[in-house]
Length: 585
Image 1 (cartoon, rainbow, N blue to C red):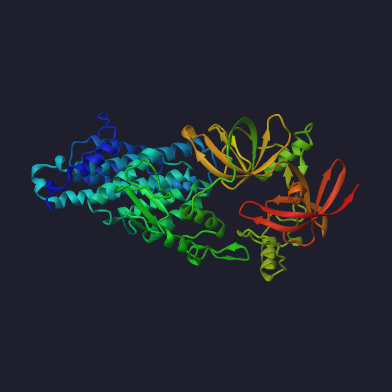
Image 2 (image 1 turned 90 degrees about the vertical axis):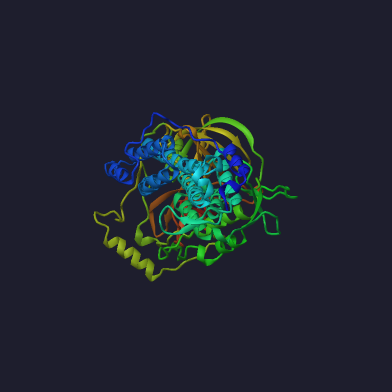
């Protein structure tokens, strides 16, 4: 096939759609354009300074965009820099482990620098794609399509792979790609399909496998559809790895079939969507069937094995807990629908993040005149309770567990290695009465939840699935909520979506009747009889002691409760209904 026989419109459609990179002539290549010179330059980089190295690689890619050398030479140099870029991305991921939002300044600067480097690396490859258009080829290369197709195939794949890496890194800082990202992704795939290169495989970034342009394209769209801003970073990484392994099971076609529930418009600036009924009639539509992916996610191969509620770490394959899979599958199988409409609402509130902060806020509310008073909330003795790992299943009925050899060994092991008495029976946990809170601005609300914004200058305190209490500035009442979604906005500000659990909270004490002098503070949720909602508690641990009771003191009146049913246990908290026993004046 002669290159000049290619349809010129194919490349023109692509170059018309993709925004050309901004070339900075003042940025010069910091070495001679040879591999040896690059290696010498890389060896002198301060590799432990990830931020400086990321900026250096970003400038290198920008310089290559303006350098007057051939596409082959540019691709060779950018390929030589890939290992360094991959190392920096790995370092950044390590740096982000356990990071809350808003990100600390160093974390924000590092991730932003790497995202910029990934963008410029992708632009070098996109520029190489454009250079293989027939009108841009030298006369001698117009007679031989082999060289041009080799460059185009590699550059198309690497462009798509770098955009996928950018998307993953964005997800780890809870950012979402916008319209121009999707325009570029769709345009790259449309060009590869027009040239018949969508199935051509290339060695991946990590040098561990080969993937095609089509596989990367599908992975990018299905990763977006997963709604990963609702998950923690470990789960996000596992979702990405699972898609890499299972994406070839997602079939695509230019015509709709019964199971083609999803579609992508290659001519659009939009991500994947659910196929409308009736389906649009357009040559640019590609219909996708995720049936095999969903079957895999529903199988034992995708689920982390649990034993007595503990997660097994034996498998090296990417897996997810059942609760995450139950949230994930509906995103790939049916359109999302809101249970109640949102309405605009503007209000300043205080947010108390985390269980301890909520307890301290309740203590402060009960003792407003003594904010510095220390409140003692001693913990249970290990000898008085069961040690049961948190289960990730939503249990609807409370299952009583008897003592086991495992529990006995765990307790004896912990007590034997307690060092300076950290597990001693009379150890006291002190709560200072100082609440860790931040200001936020509510933007909209619904019957089930709220959306608010926390500015970038606040402390890093927010994590997906964490408990928070929300308090209006003119009201002492605390409302309990769970963070369901995080979005990092421009400037590092954070948009937070929460699900409301209870409109008013009280503090109660949980204790074992075997040792009535030791108690632990928990959150008490007043029931609503009119809607058959029982009294309940929220606590940061599993309760498996049959003799545990709850004490709630209001206006000098003490009520006693017993644990009834388990509503939910997860990584962050346990939720139980309780039954009233007696009242004592």
